[in-house]
View 1 (cartoon, rainbow over the protein chains, first blue to last red):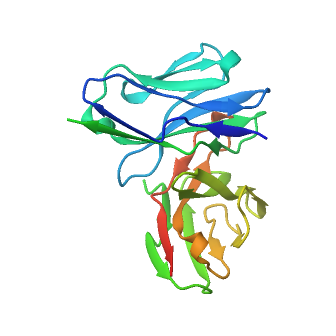
View 2 (cartoon, rainbow over the protein chains, first blue to last red):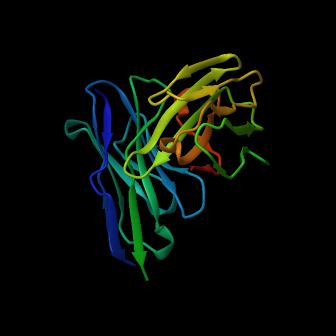
Length: 113
Length: 114
């Protein structure tokens, strides 16, 4: 069955530390990949997306993600986090160009000042 | 620039009661979705709609009913609420270019079923 997995449930780190959140999916066909963020008390918003082309995509607020097809992964990174990056992060995938997104369970990121 | 609005934002109800969560978008987006967010499960798709009068079941549709008589509205009804339906419900929409994949979310409706 098609699924999306996020390895880390809760990540705690200090300001200026580097962040990497894992995302894997199980599907051998065409995928479109997304990262969404939900800041405390706010609605979800798109951080970045990958459809094709350069597997390293850059999003808003200094985030980037790398699509590694052989590993079925789309990990999110940020070199130096800020307290304002405290949020919940969701990986999402569409399978075979379907328009419905399947979400991972989410990773809560807490950045300590 | 209202975007997508949900109401009520907070609701407490009792088991067995009918509850309707409203969703309204001002962009005339074709696609609309209802998700529920639960700890450890992320967002799970309940129902979706590709256009007015076209709806379909998602991953967890049992106990829910939707309608879409107008493009801008997509209400979600819990016919007989159960405790397991305590959750945060998010409505989302997507423009006609479905391959952009960008969902626009409402602020959520937090439902507690006692």
